[in-house]
Length: 333
Image 1 (cartoon, rainbow, N blue to C red):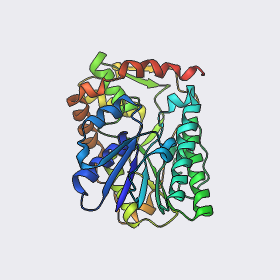
Image 2: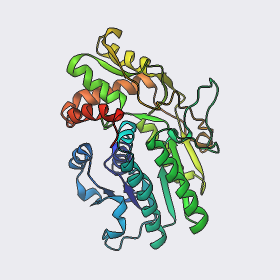
Image 3: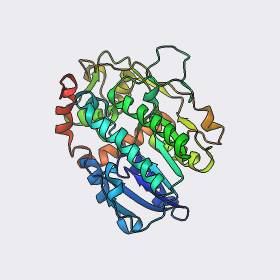
Image 4: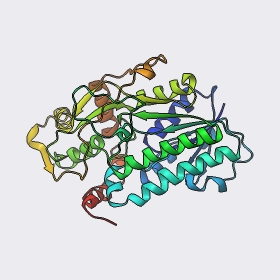
């Protein structure tokens, strides 16, 4: 199968690409496209020998301009997205441009080139927040996004629906829970906290730290995506989850314990505007395909910490700018 992986040097996309290159060379003939507009994507690009696959440096919005050398793709898997909520608060136009227009252009590329299979990597954040103890969003629930980021991803899902109905493309939408693991850019809680602990023995937490997330190790996400590619039904949505829930205080304490620190190292800062309280998805549809999460949280967290400590130069590549950007969530552009 000839596949095009978009956003192939981002966090989840790069983990997926590595799995394909290392374990599935006989199943996929792989091409990748990435704008390399993120410092961490550039670092990831430098880690891959391009003779193992063909890479095209371009923004997905400009996919019509790429010379793919008459490649006939059987499937596009779209990981490309702006994904950091803080950034979407102070620069929402960036997310509209990439996550909505970019997806539309990819789908139009499919129509023009008779590519019938498209995998859209969405997010559990499109459902919005729940405060109910036993509420788990299912794939048919109404979307109710809170941030410009999640709204852009929900919009992309709706555009996918339109292309399914209008053009008959086989589109599968995948909504993973909150990912963590190796190669995650340090805008996110776990790698950002590891960097702060290493620098000054503190963890920075928004608000009172009670916000709850559904924690999913990236390697489980990759295996879930592969299961959907192989067995998923046409024009269906699949949640990916782990059943593991912790609030931000609990994550902070787990990290601090690993570094032999205590709760006195937690620094509470002003909360993010529109901060969702809890994300929770039901993933029975994916289980019905024969998939189950493999990784226990404490083991996967330990592996994540080890990876970041062993790759401290990678982790610190753009951390100063990231710290500055976090403060911009209360400003507008």
